Amino acid sequence: MPPTLTLKSGTSWADAWQRCLTVAPEAFRDDRVLNLWNAAWQPDGRALPAVSPVDGGPVAGPPRLDRATARQAVRAALDQ
Image: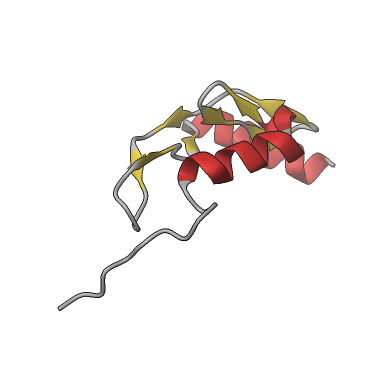
């Protein structure tokens, strides 16, 4: 029988999201995470639906870049 997973106080997705917004507001837009490349936060990519493995609640999925944008991001990293 699998163990029952429970969230401790202050560890919900909403709590973690708010802490992230507080310390790095420039890295987020609305309900999504931005990508840092070419020395700037980029709103590119498409976030796929994601859920917390602990409680099954929805969480912001990581933005997935298309091939051309990923290539630009890697090139920018090499150029820095």
